[in-house]
Length: 134
Image 1 (spheres, helix red, strand yellow):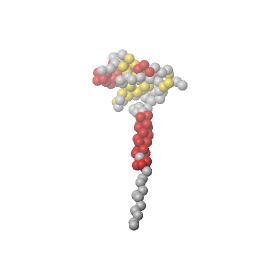
Image 2 (tube, rainbow, N blue to C red):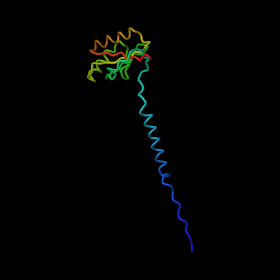
Image 3 (cartoon, one colour):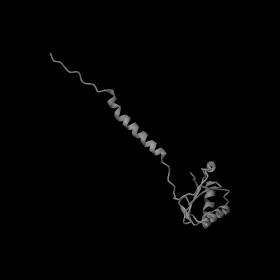
Image 4 (cartoon, helix red, strand yellow):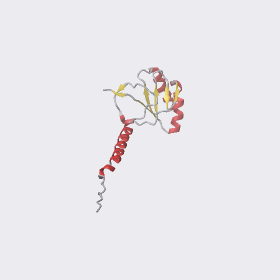
């Protein structure tokens, strides 16, 4: 009489190992992707000051570089012409509030010229953003 060996069965947990690996890789990916912040379009070193998050989500942010040039989105102009640039943007977006991120080494006269241009353009509220003083 011929005896046949019973086929060996795989343990059921072996088929779960690749699935568990994929789940952990996806978990790591989403943890890393969820914590990344979008980079600022213009690099400015903000001065330190008090935190006021009341208007942290303003519709438009102007960047004033240390050489005195002003950025709104991808457009760069001297501070004297910034009022014209902002006026068109305000009509487009339907807003009258602007945030300014001015470099701590930016000339004060460029900031004053920028703010005067904003006043002439009809901006009702201007927020100067700073880093928190720790």
